Image 1 (spheres, rainbow, N blue to C red):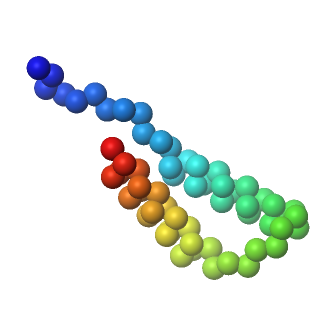
Image 2: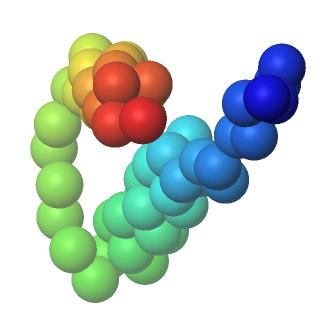
Length: 58
């Protein structure tokens, strides 16, 4: 009987979100793509959804 449950490795949601946002930001600064989105609410929504999915996908 194990007292402690072995945790499975969790997907690095926050790291992936930051990586994708940084890539989009770089492409926008290099004028390869043109995106005009209010960034702060979008970033907060994406991070919150990622955390919720990561928490309840166990």
